[in-house]
Image (cartoon, rainbow, N blue to C red):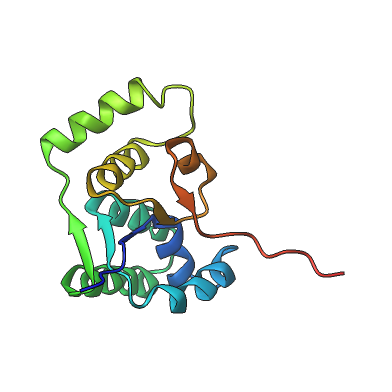
Length: 146
């Protein structure tokens, strides 16, 4: 069986697919169809970042965001990695060590560790800082038309 390599789903992608007014919405839409056959991986921390972003929305959109997370968590298509104490501690070590001089958040560091452990090199994100860890940042800004 020729299994496609997994793709990591970052909060930037979740925000862009949920909030159609987001600056990255078009880029996310272009990528969604390309990755229908590849397994997806994310973490509970990514969902936390997504919901933190959605906290500024009105109550009905916040409820919708929770439903979106619940649907993703129950989907067979996406593996959700639990934030264990060990994983958070490893993330803290990376945050204070390897990525001390970057703009990566703790959750970004944890995400990178998860990707490394699973051999994932592609991320549905626009966060250029992921490239510091050798991750392919898949969301690109649209090119200007003349």
